Structure formats: structure tokens, C-alpha cells
Length: 415
Image (cartoon, rainbow, N blue to C red; front, side, top):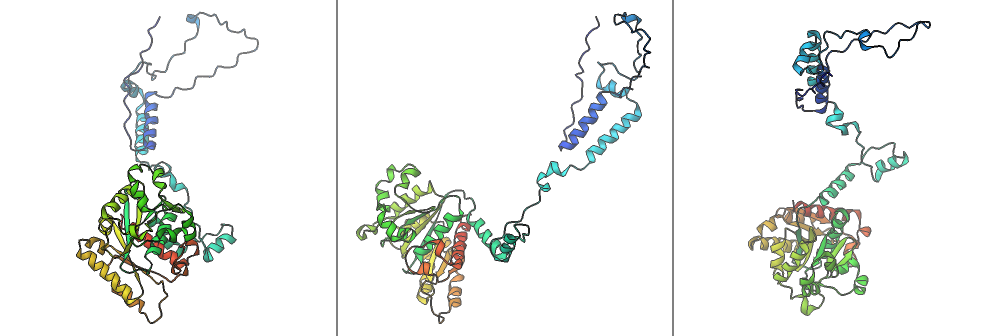
């Protein structure tokens, strides 16, 4: 019995290529080389006449006609080198040329960037002529968003960017009644609208702050259980989860709030150390926090608030006294070890009382713009000026745009 053919184990390993197309082409060429030259098609026998007797299948092997093998066909146990040497020189040269052509051929775009075969879709326009044309044509005519919409989308992108860590913005002023708390609520609701994670607002005003009333409405807040920052401090050691913390929170949509103490005898007792304990707890569950401070920078908790703040919002109004107090606040901060906070502060001027035309708004803005990172004006809006519930739905588009600009500027200061 003839010995079994030894498997060919000397096959050369394929060369690593930089793309699938190159590797495939070289592998095909290598397989063709190793398999040897193509065998000539066997000669088709002539038809056997119907009268001719059939050839017996039991005919001895020695009497059968042997078909001579092609001289150029290598034995099955030949090595790769012997196989290659058995191929005619013309065919070897042709295959080498095919290899070079495959190596030099550009890689298909489908391999490198399959997304290039998909035509990018324009964003849908909202409102205006572009939005109306899109609606009337059933989406067949899409001019894309206009400049105003692109600016709004960019503000949304800045507000919603992902943050690594927890950040805190303090909102303060040296004078009451100029839009500090309404700014905190409006900006907090805007952050909640655009961000994937819910923001938190803390009422640290020692003068019976009304942050939660402005966010929920006084009627709803009175019906709710009186949970305040004082209650949270009393039980802070037992708060070990967001579920436990939620018992001391109020919710205006996705904006989570901690109410300030309403008892005048207790509200001024919040210390810097107590605030820092609250801030440390909040930082474990919220990436963005707003702290509504009192009027002034010298009450007990302010050193802890400023120590943990990543940036500041300074509230001001369109009045000479309001502008001077805002400037004095920044000067005090710069002179007491908070120069970085003062330089990167955002000054917000709210036209709460709709000042007369005699007030030079441009002069006031110029007076403040050079000593802060950004100055943003909030126009007069009854939804802010009435001192009651602040909701984004009832605000003017210009007011909502201003709150978006403030929220974007705040997040810009975190990254």
C-alpha cells in the first residue's frame, strides 16, 4: 500500500498588510501559486455507439488505459519552493505583477470610511420662513437652520457638555431686589432643560431666602412638608444615598432644590463649616450646583461658599447704585484672596424695574464689563419682575435667551 502523502507544512506565512483589500489580494495570489498551474481540461471521450458493449466495471486496473500526468504538475507532497519552480516563468511574472498592482491599488472608501456613503442630513429648521417652507413641502425643501437657530443650538451644546466632577456657582449681590434669586431659578431651570443630569440649587440666604417659593410658587411650597437646609444638617450623617437625600429636596421639574431656613432666629446661624458639609454631600450626586447667597459677602457662611465656588454670578441692576455695588463686590473679592473668582465672574444686569430712558444703560454696562469675564443683560420681563413664580414657559424669548447665555457662560467656566 503506498504511503500516505505528507501534509505540506512548509507554507510561507502571509505578509501582514495595512488593509483588508491588500491582504485579500495577496492571499489569493499566494493560494494560486501554491496550488500550481491550472490543469488542462481532460479530453472529453467520444460518444460510445449504442451497439458497443458496455465496459465491465470489474476490469483489472492493469488493463485500464492509464492517463499520463502533466509533466509540470508537482507531486502532492512538494514544498512551496518546488511548486513555485514548477510554474512556467511567464505565469510567475504575471502573478508578481498582479501582487504589485494589488499592493499599490487604493483601498476602497467602504473599507476606510463607510459613513462617506451616507449623505449627511441637514438639521430641521424651526420657525421662521425656513421652518414654514419645510412644513409646507412636507420636508422636501430643507434650507437648514438660520443663523439665529444655529446660535441657539450652539448655546444648547455648551450648556449640555459632559463634565468630569462636581462644580458650584455662587450667585450673590450687595443689594437685594435686583434679580439675584430670579436669576438663580431661571438659570437653574435652563440647566435642567438642556443637561442630561439634573442640577441642584441651594438656598444659603441667611435672611429667610425664597428660592424654593420662586421655583415652585408660594402656594405649592406652603402645602409641601417644611424641609429646609437646617433639617438636612441635623440628619446629614444618615444621608448615604440619593434616595435618602431626596427626602430633604424640593423639585421644580428636573431642578432639585434645598430650601433655606425661614425662621429668622435660625436662618443666620449657618456657618462656613456647615455649608461645606452640605456642599460635600451634594458633590457626590450632582455635577452642577447653584448657591443662592444673601446680600453681602461677610455673613457666616460666605467664606465656605467662596472657598468651594468654581465661579461667581454677580447680580446687578440698571441703576447707578446697583452698578457701583457690583463693582464694589468685585473689588472686595479681589482684595480678600478671591482675585481669580473676581476676574472670571459673570455680571448679570437685570432690568427688573424697567428703568426710564434717562438711565444710560450703555454707560453702566461699560462701567462693569472691563472688570469681569462676561457681562449679560436680562431684559425687563413681568415673569421676573413680579417677584412670584419663575417659569420658562411664560418668559419672553429674549429673557430665555439671556438665561441660556448665562448658563452657557457658567459651564464654560468649568472646563
